[in-house]
Length: 89
Image 1 (cartoon, rainbow, N blue to C red):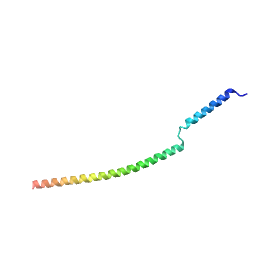
Image 2 (tube, rainbow, N blue to C red; image 1 turned 60 degrees about the vertical axis):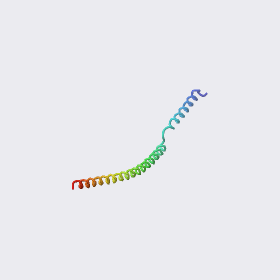
Image 3 (cartoon, rainbow, N blue to C red; image 1 turned 30 degrees about the vertical axis):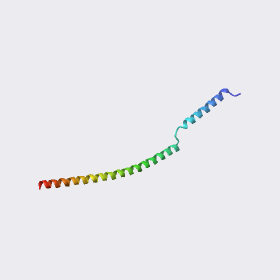
Image 4 (cartoon, helix red, strand yellow; image 1 turned 90 degrees about the vertical axis):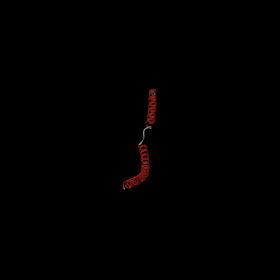
């Protein structure tokens, strides 16, 4: 004759196994981590390219401003020198 508590214990064990499997399903596997790492590395490479392009644009803008300011400064210095020469001479 079978022990009635044995079936209940087996059922409980099966339920525990099912719950454990459900709980473990939430954890990442090595392949999941490798996939995530690949995605992150791709995003970093894309961002690196975007940043290089933006820095190049900013560098060009900065050079334009520097040349403009230098020309303005030279023009002002020449104008002051001419004015001083006219008034002093």
